[in-house]
Amino acid sequence: MKGFLFSLCCVFLSLPALSLKAVDFSEGHIRLTFHEKEGRFSLYYLSDPARSLYEPLFSDKDPRKTFLAVRVNNKVYRLGESGAFRCRVEAGRNPSLIFESSFLRVIEEFSFIRTAGSFDTNGVKVRITVENLNSKRASISARLLIDTMLGEGRGGIPFVTTKGKMNGETAYEANSTEPWWLSGNGKLSLMGSISEGVNTPAQLIIFSNWKRLSSAFWKIKYSSGRTFHYIPFSVGDSAVCYYFDQKTLNRGETQTWEFLLASGDEQGFTAVSAGMRETGAFPDDTPDRSSMQADLAALRELLRKLDEYMSPLSTASDEEIDALELSINRLRDRYSRR
Image (cartoon, helix red, strand yellow):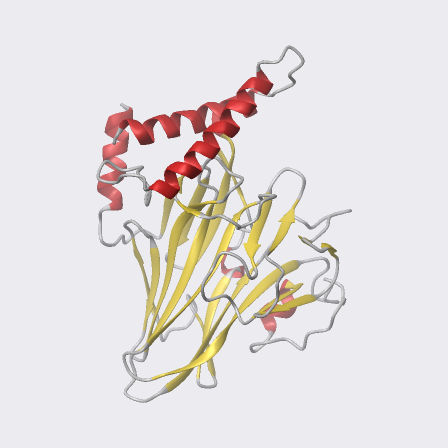
């Protein structure tokens, strides 16, 4: 049965495009959901393998609250809402949301990743590519707003960085040495890149109230330390917005930007490995040397946890043991197909 399900997944992943209104892509502890009708994506973490329970890493009640927008010359298009763009889903090794108009093509491409402190796939790399289809030169920029929510609520801390707690409006520019940000609730956490792990990072990242960021024409007038309240519209509604710098492109020229999202990891994005699709989870792939070294490190961590759980004083829950078994099985399956 497992072999049949694996083959079935491979068949679906090999299809060039899907016409479903919502489609899921899962690997390791991460599930990526595309909402084709809205032109949006959601990200989930497998918090309970025994019950196959996935929990959202950012707000998913209304997927439209997390969105990608592009600015062409001085006109802004919110992708998924603008009638100038058609949206379609493309499946395969790197699932993508593709937005096309007569003057611009935008590809929001996702690849699964594993961070250094995780023994299984726990995040995604997002690559945004814009291509000028117009006959004239155009100045193009992009921004992506994420409606975070894990750090909200009574006593919650909206964001944390290596410098400590972030309780008010904050901004980081491209020359920042701050590696990552994190939003968590003690059980789940979402981590995003600032300067670490990508070749073409955002020019500016602003942490603020969601309504304040969403309502802005483009960039807000940043005010350091301002609360996450936006009276009378919303209270304590946190969000993070990635701004990607303006580029002037001739017809046919492209520009690419990247950022990372993952479940929280105390080691950050210092050593990001490709997900299992890129490193041997499928029959025609073979893990490379760097991936094997990462897997060896993961195996050592699994053995350490196994030794800890076997102790007479262990208080490991059934969920923790199930997660450990799942990770061991994935490593075993990965190398048994070589």
